Length: 72
Image (cartoon, rainbow, N blue to C red; front, side, top):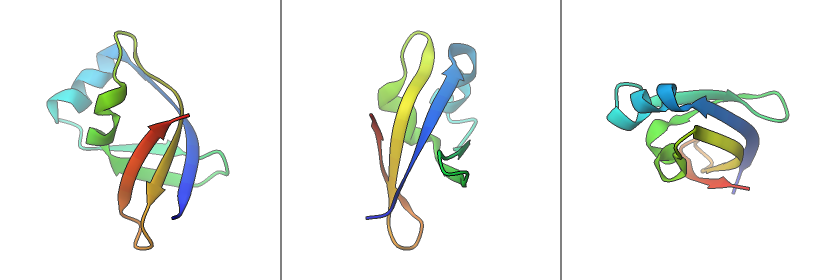
């Protein structure tokens, strides 16, 4: 299964947009330089008081559809 790894740092004030659904996708730059867009709902389990921070791995299918997001 293909995957990309990246750092994600979203401040608490910004996370609210994703939580409410007004922002539907997130664009990041992977550790190997690729720009990757994935559905914002995948970050919901990782929201903390200070926002979302950490290293993540996004797994996707052969068609580029996001399957899962995991904090490393």
